Amino acid sequence: MPLPGHTRSSYQRDHLLQTPDTFVRAPLPGMSGATAIVHAAPAMGAKFAQYTVELEPGGSFETTSSQTFLYVIEGGIATGAEKLGPAGFLYLPPGCASVVSAESPARVAVIEKPYSALASPAPALRCGTERDIDPSPLLDDDAIEVRKLIPDCSEFDFAVNSMTFAPGAQLPMIEIHVMEHGLLMLEGEGVYRLGERWYNVMAGDFIWMAPYCPQWFGALGRRPAKYLIYKDWNRHPMKS
Image (tube, rainbow, N blue to C red; front, side, top):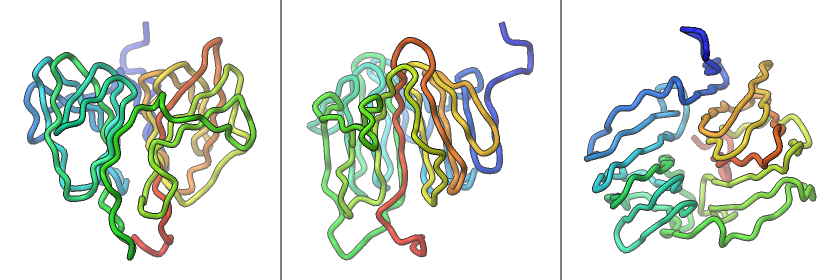
Protein backbone atom coordinates (compact mmCIF):
# COMPACT_ATOMS: atom_id res chain seq x y z
CA MET A 1 0.00 0.00 0.00
CA PRO A 2 1.45 3.44 -0.94
CA LEU A 3 2.27 5.83 1.86
CA PRO A 4 -0.26 8.67 2.38
CA GLY A 5 0.55 11.61 0.16
CA HIS A 6 2.79 9.59 -2.19
CA THR A 7 2.10 8.95 -5.87
CA ARG A 8 3.92 8.10 -9.11
CA SER A 9 2.26 11.14 -10.70
CA SER A 10 4.52 14.07 -11.56
CA TYR A 11 3.90 17.42 -13.26
CA GLN A 12 6.97 19.17 -14.64
CA ARG A 13 7.59 22.10 -16.98
CA ASP A 14 7.80 19.87 -20.06
CA HIS A 15 5.83 16.75 -19.11
CA LEU A 16 3.11 15.19 -17.01
CA LEU A 17 2.73 11.65 -15.71
CA GLN A 18 -0.84 11.26 -14.43
CA THR A 19 -1.59 7.97 -12.69
CA PRO A 20 -5.07 6.60 -11.86
CA ASP A 21 -4.71 7.28 -8.11
CA THR A 22 -4.71 11.02 -8.90
CA PHE A 23 -7.57 11.08 -11.43
CA VAL A 24 -10.30 13.61 -10.64
CA ARG A 25 -13.69 12.90 -12.23
CA ALA A 26 -16.16 15.64 -13.11
CA PRO A 27 -18.88 15.96 -15.76
CA LEU A 28 -18.36 18.33 -18.67
CA PRO A 29 -21.16 20.37 -20.28
CA GLY A 30 -23.46 18.14 -22.33
CA MET A 31 -22.78 15.00 -20.30
CA SER A 32 -25.56 12.82 -18.91
CA GLY A 33 -24.79 9.65 -17.00
CA ALA A 34 -21.13 10.25 -17.78
CA THR A 35 -18.04 11.81 -16.25
CA ALA A 36 -14.67 12.97 -17.57
CA ILE A 37 -11.05 12.71 -16.48
CA VAL A 38 -9.28 15.63 -18.15
CA HIS A 39 -5.66 14.69 -18.84
CA ALA A 40 -4.35 17.53 -21.02
CA ALA A 41 -5.80 20.94 -21.89
CA PRO A 42 -4.78 24.48 -22.89
CA ALA A 43 -4.70 25.34 -19.16
CA MET A 44 -1.36 23.48 -18.98
CA GLY A 45 -0.05 24.97 -22.22
CA ALA A 46 -1.15 22.12 -24.49
CA LYS A 47 -2.55 22.96 -27.92
CA PHE A 48 -5.07 20.13 -27.71
CA ALA A 49 -7.35 18.55 -25.12
CA GLN A 50 -7.44 14.89 -24.15
CA TYR A 51 -9.78 13.29 -21.68
CA THR A 52 -11.31 9.93 -20.82
CA VAL A 53 -15.09 9.67 -20.63
CA GLU A 54 -16.65 7.02 -18.41
CA LEU A 55 -20.25 6.26 -19.34
CA GLU A 56 -22.97 4.52 -17.37
CA PRO A 57 -25.59 2.41 -19.20
CA GLY A 58 -27.68 4.94 -21.13
CA GLY A 59 -25.10 7.67 -20.59
CA SER A 60 -24.13 10.19 -23.26
CA PHE A 61 -21.92 13.19 -23.99
CA GLU A 62 -21.59 15.82 -26.70
CA THR A 63 -18.45 16.47 -28.73
CA THR A 64 -17.46 20.05 -29.51
CA SER A 65 -17.18 21.71 -32.91
CA SER A 66 -13.40 21.12 -32.89
CA GLN A 67 -12.13 18.12 -34.81
CA THR A 68 -12.45 15.14 -32.49
CA PHE A 69 -10.95 11.66 -32.29
CA LEU A 70 -12.64 8.91 -30.26
CA TYR A 71 -11.10 5.56 -29.27
CA VAL A 72 -13.11 2.96 -27.34
CA ILE A 73 -11.09 1.57 -24.45
CA GLU A 74 -13.86 -0.57 -23.03
CA GLY A 75 -17.50 -1.34 -23.85
CA GLY A 76 -19.29 0.09 -26.86
CA ILE A 77 -20.66 3.43 -28.06
CA ALA A 78 -22.89 4.81 -30.80
CA THR A 79 -22.86 8.18 -32.53
CA GLY A 80 -25.06 8.93 -35.51
CA ALA A 81 -25.09 5.83 -37.69
CA GLU A 82 -21.74 4.59 -36.34
CA LYS A 83 -21.39 1.93 -33.65
CA LEU A 84 -18.00 1.16 -32.13
CA GLY A 85 -16.79 -1.65 -29.88
CA PRO A 86 -13.46 -2.06 -28.05
CA ALA A 87 -10.53 -0.65 -30.07
CA GLY A 88 -12.99 1.04 -32.46
CA PHE A 89 -12.20 4.63 -33.42
CA LEU A 90 -13.92 7.59 -35.05
CA TYR A 91 -12.60 10.86 -36.47
CA LEU A 92 -15.11 13.73 -36.58
CA PRO A 93 -14.09 16.66 -38.84
CA PRO A 94 -14.22 20.27 -37.60
CA GLY A 95 -17.77 21.55 -37.30
CA CYS A 96 -19.16 18.02 -37.01
CA ALA A 97 -20.32 17.93 -33.38
CA SER A 98 -22.14 14.76 -32.36
CA VAL A 99 -23.81 13.03 -29.42
CA VAL A 100 -22.08 9.87 -28.21
CA SER A 101 -24.10 7.34 -26.21
CA ALA A 102 -23.59 3.95 -24.56
CA GLU A 103 -26.08 1.16 -23.84
CA SER A 104 -23.70 -0.49 -21.36
CA PRO A 105 -20.74 0.77 -19.29
CA ALA A 106 -18.01 2.17 -21.52
CA ARG A 107 -14.74 4.10 -21.43
CA VAL A 108 -13.70 6.32 -24.33
CA ALA A 109 -10.51 8.28 -25.01
CA VAL A 110 -11.33 11.67 -26.54
CA ILE A 111 -8.86 13.99 -28.30
CA GLU A 112 -9.90 17.46 -29.50
CA LYS A 113 -7.81 19.97 -31.44
CA PRO A 114 -8.62 23.20 -33.32
CA TYR A 115 -8.06 22.49 -36.99
CA SER A 116 -5.15 24.17 -38.78
CA ALA A 117 -6.39 24.48 -42.35
CA LEU A 118 -4.42 24.23 -45.59
CA ALA A 119 -5.63 25.09 -49.10
CA SER A 120 -6.95 21.53 -49.44
CA PRO A 121 -10.39 20.61 -48.02
CA ALA A 122 -10.70 19.50 -44.41
CA PRO A 123 -10.63 15.72 -43.84
CA ALA A 124 -13.80 13.66 -44.00
CA LEU A 125 -15.29 11.53 -41.23
CA ARG A 126 -13.29 8.34 -40.67
CA CYS A 127 -14.42 5.26 -38.76
CA GLY A 128 -12.67 1.93 -38.20
CA THR A 129 -11.33 -0.72 -35.87
CA GLU A 130 -7.72 -0.97 -34.82
CA ARG A 131 -7.51 -4.72 -35.51
CA ASP A 132 -8.37 -4.10 -39.18
CA ILE A 133 -5.25 -1.95 -39.67
CA ASP A 134 -2.11 -3.80 -40.68
CA PRO A 135 0.82 -3.07 -38.36
CA SER A 136 4.16 -1.81 -39.61
CA PRO A 137 7.49 -2.17 -37.80
CA LEU A 138 9.09 0.92 -36.30
CA LEU A 139 12.31 1.60 -38.23
CA ASP A 140 12.43 -2.07 -39.35
CA ASP A 141 12.20 -3.34 -35.76
CA ASP A 142 9.57 -6.12 -35.78
CA ALA A 143 9.43 -6.00 -31.96
CA ILE A 144 7.56 -2.67 -32.18
CA GLU A 145 4.27 -2.60 -34.12
CA VAL A 146 2.74 0.69 -35.23
CA ARG A 147 -0.87 1.02 -36.37
CA LYS A 148 -1.80 4.38 -37.91
CA LEU A 149 -5.38 5.21 -36.97
CA ILE A 150 -5.29 8.53 -38.84
CA PRO A 151 -4.15 8.47 -42.50
CA ASP A 152 -0.65 9.76 -43.22
CA CYS A 153 -1.71 12.62 -45.48
CA SER A 154 -1.50 16.41 -45.31
CA GLU A 155 -5.21 17.05 -44.79
CA PHE A 156 -4.78 15.87 -41.21
CA ASP A 157 -2.88 18.14 -38.84
CA PHE A 158 -2.43 15.46 -36.19
CA ALA A 159 -1.78 11.74 -35.97
CA VAL A 160 -3.00 9.03 -33.61
CA ASN A 161 -1.17 5.70 -33.56
CA SER A 162 -1.25 2.62 -31.40
CA MET A 163 2.18 1.19 -30.60
CA THR A 164 2.76 -2.31 -29.26
CA PHE A 165 6.13 -3.32 -27.80
CA ALA A 166 7.20 -6.92 -27.35
CA PRO A 167 8.63 -7.62 -23.86
CA GLY A 168 12.04 -5.96 -23.70
CA ALA A 169 11.54 -3.87 -26.86
CA GLN A 170 12.58 -0.22 -26.70
CA LEU A 171 12.62 2.91 -28.79
CA PRO A 172 15.86 3.04 -30.80
CA MET A 173 16.74 6.59 -29.75
CA ILE A 174 15.96 9.40 -27.34
CA GLU A 175 13.62 11.70 -29.27
CA ILE A 176 13.60 15.51 -29.03
CA HIS A 177 11.24 17.25 -31.47
CA VAL A 178 8.80 20.10 -32.05
CA MET A 179 5.68 17.94 -31.75
CA GLU A 180 3.80 17.48 -28.47
CA HIS A 181 2.27 14.18 -27.40
CA GLY A 182 -0.65 12.80 -25.45
CA LEU A 183 -0.08 9.14 -24.52
CA LEU A 184 -2.44 6.70 -22.83
CA MET A 185 -1.02 3.39 -21.63
CA LEU A 186 -3.44 0.63 -22.66
CA GLU A 187 -1.63 -2.57 -21.73
CA GLY A 188 1.48 -3.80 -19.95
CA GLU A 189 4.21 -1.77 -18.31
CA GLY A 190 7.56 -0.19 -18.95
CA VAL A 191 9.91 2.66 -18.15
CA TYR A 192 9.65 6.15 -19.65
CA ARG A 193 12.33 8.80 -19.73
CA LEU A 194 10.75 12.27 -19.74
CA GLY A 195 13.14 15.19 -19.62
CA GLU A 196 15.81 14.25 -17.08
CA ARG A 197 13.48 11.97 -15.10
CA TRP A 198 12.70 8.25 -15.31
CA TYR A 199 9.28 6.79 -14.51
CA ASN A 200 7.79 3.34 -14.16
CA VAL A 201 4.55 3.36 -16.15
CA MET A 202 1.71 0.89 -16.56
CA ALA A 203 -1.73 0.40 -18.09
CA GLY A 204 -4.07 3.25 -17.13
CA ASP A 205 -1.37 5.95 -16.93
CA PHE A 206 -1.47 9.11 -19.05
CA ILE A 207 1.58 11.07 -20.23
CA TRP A 208 1.76 14.55 -21.76
CA MET A 209 5.01 15.59 -23.46
CA ALA A 210 5.63 19.22 -24.41
CA PRO A 211 7.54 20.15 -27.56
CA TYR A 212 11.26 19.35 -27.22
CA CYS A 213 10.81 17.19 -24.13
CA PRO A 214 13.47 14.42 -24.29
CA GLN A 215 11.59 11.11 -24.40
CA TRP A 216 12.29 7.37 -24.54
CA PHE A 217 10.37 4.18 -23.70
CA GLY A 218 11.28 0.56 -23.02
CA ALA A 219 8.85 -2.28 -22.27
CA LEU A 220 9.21 -4.30 -19.08
CA GLY A 221 7.59 -7.49 -17.83
CA ARG A 222 6.54 -10.65 -19.62
CA ARG A 223 3.66 -9.31 -21.68
CA PRO A 224 3.57 -6.72 -24.48
CA ALA A 225 3.18 -3.04 -23.63
CA LYS A 226 0.81 -0.96 -25.70
CA TYR A 227 -0.10 2.70 -25.81
CA LEU A 228 -2.24 5.13 -27.80
CA ILE A 229 -0.27 8.21 -28.81
CA TYR A 230 -1.27 11.59 -30.29
CA LYS A 231 1.04 14.08 -32.00
CA ASP A 232 0.53 17.31 -33.95
CA TRP A 233 2.27 17.40 -37.31
CA ASN A 234 1.97 18.11 -41.06
CA ARG A 235 2.07 21.86 -40.49
CA HIS A 236 4.89 24.43 -40.72
CA PRO A 237 6.35 25.29 -37.27
CA MET A 238 5.62 28.98 -37.90
CA LYS A 239 1.90 28.22 -38.29
CA SER A 240 0.16 28.11 -34.92
